[in-house]
Every structure is written in C-alpha cells, then in structure tokens.
Length: 328
Ligand SMILES: C[S@@+](CC[C@H](N)C(=O)[O-])C[C@H]1O[C@@H](n2cnc3c(N)ncnc32)[C@H](O)[C@@H]1O
Image (cartoon, rainbow, N blue to C red):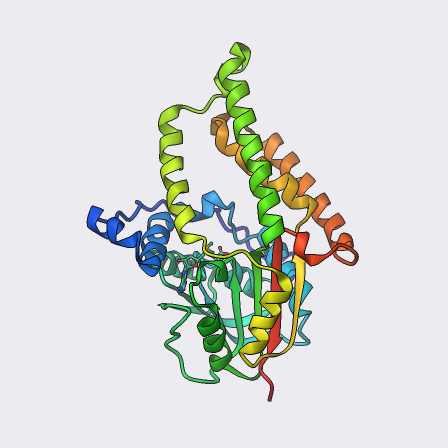
C-alpha cells in the first residue's frame, strides 16, 4: 500500500471496559509469571492503544516499516503468510500489512483480550488477519507453516527465550525470516528509566510547590490508578538485552544470517521524559500544539539516531531488533 492509500483509522478503536481478575487470580499471579502476563495484559487491552499512542495510520505505518526494514531489510516482494507472537492490539502486523510488507497475518497473544482487540482493528481496516490465543513458548501451528515470524516489544516478557526461539524456528518455512523489534537494551533501559524518574519527581515537586502551577498537578486519585498499573508492569517485564547475547541466543535456535540493530538513542532520551511528563500532568493541559511539537522533535531525533547507528555501539540504544532466517 502506498502512502496515499493508507486509511485514516481512528486511534484506539472503540471503548472497552477493563477486564478484571479476581483477588485469588491476582494473588496466584505473583508466583506464576505466565498468569501475570495474561491477567495484566487482559486488564490493559482496552486502554493499550491510548497508553502507547497506537494507531493504524501513516505515523505508525512509517514507524513499523522503518523498524522492520532497519534490521530485516526491504523484501523484493511482500511476505505471504506471517505469524506474530505477543501481538497485543495488532500494532506491528497490521501496520506492516498497511505498509505492503505482509499479505496475510496471524496474530497471537497469551491475552485473549489483546487478540480480540487486534481482530477488531483488522476487521475495521479490512485486512486478511486471523487470531489465536497462544503462548509463544508453545505455538499451536504446524512445522514450516509461515514465511515470516515477527514480534514487537514481546520477548522481554518471555521466561524461556530458548524455547520461544526454537518454536519460532520450527514454524518458519525453510528460507523464512524472523524479525523481532523493539526490545529494551540493558544500558538504554537504565538511562531511560533514570531520565523518567528524574522527570517524574521534578514535575511533581514543581507542580505541588509552585502555587502558580498548581493547576498542572495531576489529581492524586488518578495517580493511584496509574501507580497500581505501574506495580503490575514491574512484574511482567522480565528481561533487558545485550545485542550480542541476543544474537547468540537466536543463532542457537538454528537460524542463520543473524544480525541485530539498535534503535532510538537521542529519541529515547527525549521520548521517555516526555511520556513521563504527560503522565504527571492533567491531560487537558497539553493540547494539540504540545503533542505535535513533542512528536516532531522525536521524529527529528530519530532521524539523527539512524545516522548515529552507523558509529555508536548498539548496546547504548534504547531498543534492539534482531533478525535471521531458517536455512533451506
Ligand atoms: C508490551 S506488549 C506488546 C504488544 C505488541 N506487540 C505491541 O508492540 O504493541 C507485550 C505483549 O506480549 C504478550 N505476552 C506476554 N507473554 C506472552 C507469552 N508467553 N506468549 C505470548 N504472548 C505473550 C502480552 O500479553 C502483551 O500483549
């Protein structure tokens, strides 16, 4: 699909009530990481697009395509049948399809709520997508059944990465490609976390102590809700990555031509504090002008980062992507 043909899809889709888990389920989830993933992401599914500014329009099509091609290259023809693990609300597969890189997609996720939302989006966009609830460590598909396997911001949630990569290798056809993008690096994640923490404390301190800025303080009640979610988030994020170690792990699965790519350096030093600032102040204070400025600045820094990627070690970028193919 060309730039002009990408439809203007609404952000976030329809409103959904949050799925709630029982107190017993939540208690059990503290010692069962898979259950924690399922409950947390089910709870988050209805609001996930808003939280991460996910849409199915040119902005996200460009983002998904750029991340994919930076590591996986530009294919001569679209991939036929693609599988996504931990697809969430469909951000990667659906935008790659809108970009014309994939013909038909299967989206899977351990959270039923996420799969439902992804399929709703696909239907609204008229894309050829099926969905299934599935654990990435036990894929319910035949050997050699996909031309492409993709993941975005997912493998840092998987307890057993060796088993997951072995599964991805198994379901790929000989010659088929794996592309996993958007995984946090050890160094990049640490820097981003520190910048975010600093932004949070500074914003809270300034808005609570300077009377003229009191209207910028977010009500405590809203903060309680976000901090409960933040606590659950800490349980589901299991790994950060060193690019070389990640490449070695993927090679172990039997894939060949393995390479990694670092994404977002300066863009993450801007993007994470901006996200944190936006979470710390009332939403209505930040209008279209601010959002447009924040996004344009992020885009400009992202362009600089692509040049820096040629000289700066991948390990310091915020995200790492990895690719490889199943030998024939
Ligand atoms: C951070 S979200 C990313 C979603 C989507 N890929 C995106 O980029 O917007 C991680 C997703 O991985 C899913 N997940 C976590 N553990 C999983 C597992 N073992 N198997 C499959 N999906 C899993 C979660 O339910 C969640 O939807």
